[in-house]
Image (tube, rainbow, N blue to C red; front, side, top):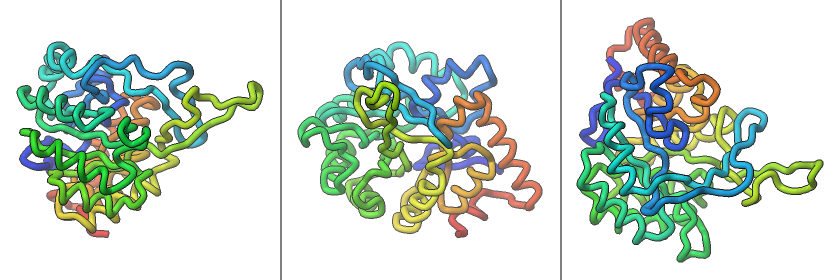
Length: 298
């Protein structure tokens, strides 16, 4: 009833733990059986280890939160040797989220991940690109096209490209990523925001801006998923402020094949189980035999 197939990767249900909010799975295993998830997106990886940003990294805001973690991670090789070994003990789909400062970094990271038994790569193109003055690859469609095409040329795993809502034109960005060979798309990543400490009279974050996530962004993320789903013919995974099974159903009705849950994990660690159960109960109550019956009906 709940199973989903994305680019040949079979998920037992459409609920995936979003990158950056779930670690590598082990952190949440103390709260529930994480193998019940449809999939887990790893913490954002880079070719080499990163310590992340200095100063405050997470800040609660009305209806959501801002984060400026800075992709702290152990690096791809360490992940393959240690974290992935533990993740593979979990009976669910494993998606490696990969970022980078240059296209070359992405390619080297993908080549290393090719030789593992992960199920899919989620390419984070919201990273600042050092060759373009720090502008994220996911802002301009032409730059994203180049990056995705280069990565797809060496990638042996299904490639899902994670789109930034800060793109100049999200639908054009989706088209360009499809043309470059993306097998699937996930959207949206965090919105660019900021916070100010009025007592210290300075920005809360050392980097000034940070990524906004949580319930506040859901209506905008939902609209973007709807627009992109109507415009492309590859699977779309929706995320952005999903906190309930009702939210998840909305995204599926808007066209999403599956959904990712991020910030809500910090509010209620086992929220994904509530969402899975809620979707199943809704389908039974509405006599829906497959998610295909409601996917994209809006």
